[in-house]
Amino acid sequence: MAGRRALRSGSPVVPLLPRRAFLAGLTLATLTTGAASACGRSSPVGREAAGPGSLSVGAIPDQDPEVLQRLYGTVADSLSAALDLDVAYTPVTDYGAAVSLFRTGDLDLVWFGGLTGVQARLQTPGATTIAQRDVDADFHSVFVVQSATGLAASDDLRPLAGLRFTYGAETSTSGRLMPAWFLQQAGVDPQGFPGGPAFSGSHDATLQLVASGSYQAGVLNEQVWAARTAEGAVDPSVVAYARTPGYPDYHWLLGPRAADLAGPLRDFFTGLRADDPADAAVLDLFGAGSFVPARASDYDRIEQIGRELGLVT
Image (cartoon, rainbow, N blue to C red; front, side, top):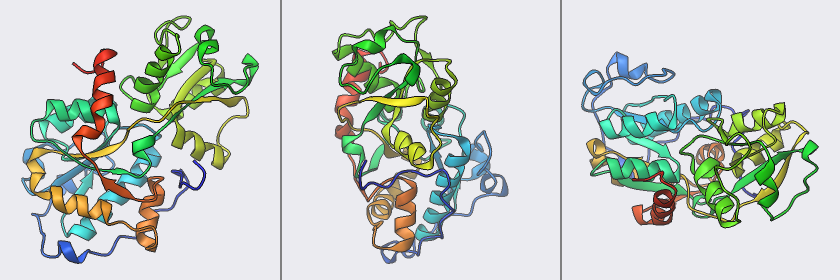
């Protein structure tokens, strides 16, 4: 993670981005009062209430709600200013809800992990993969352990087999799918931990469970680990044990109702520049140096592993 921006829970709300010239004149209908107030709600506004011209943005709830509200509320405001349209961020309760609400059209543009993005795309004909961060083609997870285990940093995952272990969310790419795959490749049964593995629900929750001693080990997104470590928010009893090899992960996925926005949205994200202060502030919130175009085929490996582990059908 050296040289990469990490997502910081203390990051301020960034200023709105200037409207981009290539998007001038692109205008959608105004959200109704109910849709505009969706930012901050736990359940989305229905499509009929929101109106056919709205753009509803969502994301998998992989971190603390306060972090997500700031991040995606900022993204919604920035998109609204840059594209001259009304955009609302709608929080969701869990990973499965993000996939389901994308499938039903209640969410138009969603920041998915690799696995949930594959699930959502396969369930939603006409969905378009828009963009990923520069870090997403080679993403990593970190296995962490309680210092009381006496384990020192190692590439050998086998000692984890005898520990009480927690993943993140059940369909998290970095918190479950790929760590389970790498455990299996190392000869560790990814379901065979004492008492069975737990599922914390998010990367932050994984850290909390290991810190409390409820579990002796766990695994989480490397960016969250780096960010919380930099903040001094990681309990000293929690230490890094191993880093996984790289794999493809997060990306923006657009639903068919807003298919005409695929080009402008891709241009918006890939047009963010680190040398522009306003752009850099948004990139910093995402822990990225830039966004790059993404294709569905970028996640073929995730789909294959998901099928092998029974998480994609």
